[in-house]
Image (cartoon, rainbow over all chains, first blue to last red; front, top):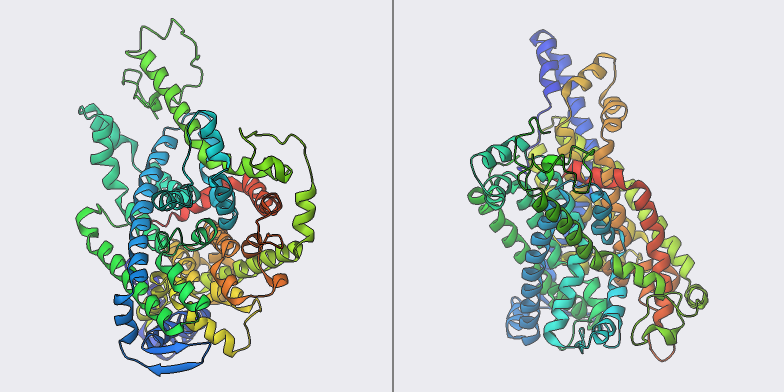
Length: 318
Length: 314
């Protein structure tokens, strides 16, 4: 993962062969080579600067201003938006909602993905079919998936219908606090767990069978083999998957919009949904930008923290 | 995989998975040799049972969506719920197409996702190749600059991007929906995947191309790119799905119904009283989901393997 560009081995071999006697030509070639390199990265680099880095700087700038798009007022308030955020109970709610959502989603997603990958890795005949089943929601459009689940989770919807058939009166899943959050998490887990499952499956399949056999011959039980051999060997994948999942969990928006609309109350108004409401419903662009900065800082801190802990629990960085 | 017969069968049944000749019955010839054949069979049945139960939440919603889309509105919330429609109707489908420019929205989604995918494939493979293979001053630093995008949720920068689009009169056009995913933060992962792949490509192949008189561009286009099909297919899948699923951006940038993409269009099926037209919505959802699902079923080998191979192994 270390962002070091590899000095192409081809170039070195080339340089040796042409030798110092043809220095001017070598320099010219090197210049042309470098020019090609710059040319190749230009579109992506321009995108990174123009669509990511400059907007990021601008978000910081906006966040220092009181800016209501409707009255088109734009005045410098310094840290005003941030102090306002700290005092805003609905912002606190959204932090709590985001925390619950992320913790629930990441835990459930990683555990389930790993469990499914281990199941599929038993290579029983016919597991391809189940792999297809588990993976299929990844292919289903996110909004479509959310719509179907919101249909199922209605008070008079399919799930409560089946529950009442066995004599249980189900709750109004999307309209009561705890079950609303739970529903949103579970719907999202089933939607995307297949992707992580595939990545884990690929990692599991690269664990040498001999190692596990050896441990087993030494008398280790299945769980012990998994914990002491398999898990350390797939830890690089585990790290990357968890980073992607954590960041992804903070970006959740469409599911919330379709399933609960942030409710009931503010119980499922996660950060991005809060940001969207402030910016595009109430047109408080400065305030929303401050939320964006907070979101950015959270993602940054989480990513750094995960890399920091890498040495402790990642066995071998590939 | 197994070299000897004496090894104990694992509880998972892996050690015997290689012997397809084994009969599922209680064959007496096998019984005395194996220490715990009944346990082995039970665990196998348990595993299948577990996988079958686990499949329900993954498969049932899609099936329920499909079947419910043929039900009249009155049958949707019937108790107890019936899996199959009592009266199969096509009205929901007709309504889905006529109450909204659904087909136009469909086309919007398809062409935007296709353009984004093609553009991302081109630009990310170029950048990934340069960062992996070409030596130029500042490469490390510039790669870091690009990589920043991987740590920034697209939502963080939505306000400035919206303002910029507004200033350039690009609001209510598809340009932001194409350009931002193609070159902005969402495309960084693609560049990262491509670079990782090109790093692992053996240098000798390029050397051979060079001896044949190919320049950098030639080596890239004729040697490196054709070899990178697994990575390209993974990038294509990820990118297409991401664009296909995009919801916040079209919601923010586009306001005309005929310019909506599917995810936004799907949420707009309400009657004049603001009541959701469930069966119409489910019909539209079915039309959105099923074609992509079918493509996946036919191409799933490349699909899954492409993703797994590129492996995002770091």
